[in-house]
Amino acid sequence: MDDTVRLYVVATPIGNLSDLSPRAVEVLQTVDLIACEDTRTTGRLLKHIHSSVPTISYHQHNEESRSEQLLEMMLQGKTLAVVSDAGMPGISDPGERLIAKAVDQGLPLSVLPGPCAFLTALVGSGLPASRFSFIGFLEKNRSARRAELQAFSQREETLIFYEAPHRLKETLALFHEVFGDRRACLARELSKLHEEYERGPLGELAQRYETKTPRGEYVLILEGFTQAQREDEARAHEAAYTVREDVLAALKQGCSKKEAIKQVARARGLSKNQVYQEVLDL
Image (cartoon, rainbow, N blue to C red):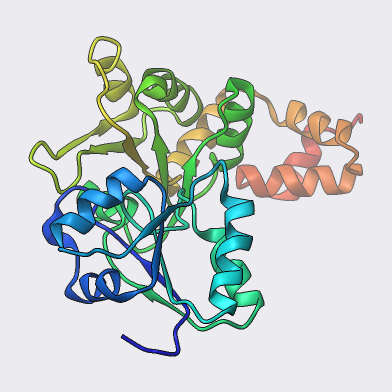
């Protein structure tokens, strides 16, 4: 262990205790204090690795005040580790504020790589993993969630969400409504005995959970907006609206006639003259 480091950010197992790295074991056996989300959960982990290092609670309800207290300890020369109940601290778990404060004070810190639920789920989903965005938990309010999802609807990269079991049924129905029948994957109990991946179109998953009872937190992996989907939407739009209606809609949004014709021509793959001929009287 590096004597100059004041804060170790330690990823802990998301289910299988064998996934804790030897380096993480060494750090958790030798630091002065471990800040943890739940002292009982971390206590079981420390018992497993025969560590007697004291712990202190550090969770969403005391994160701000506790961060100041822990920062003062580090400034006095103490070496701390921060862990969450499972996975990497700071990723949808406490840790971000303490890390930011340590960085602001110029305190040396070290992040120990390790288990992370959303990366594990992404790789196991079978969906494209070269470009992705981690969103995490959505807003709890339904209308706010809908607005949030609609803002993501044109994103081309794979999207990753976390969801609690009591909201999963409603969330899947909302996803199907906003994103259509895109490919998706639900992952739960990762690295545990009953690890499960459920893959399929959103409509199929939403229908399944009309009767199936969700258990545990889920990672929801969603296919990005593909070129094929973009073309399908364009064809559907062209079938529902005329060129003239599209130009009128652009004019209502404040475009000049010239700009409106240009936009509609580009969107429909037409020449500007073809569009112009449809709106000579405007």
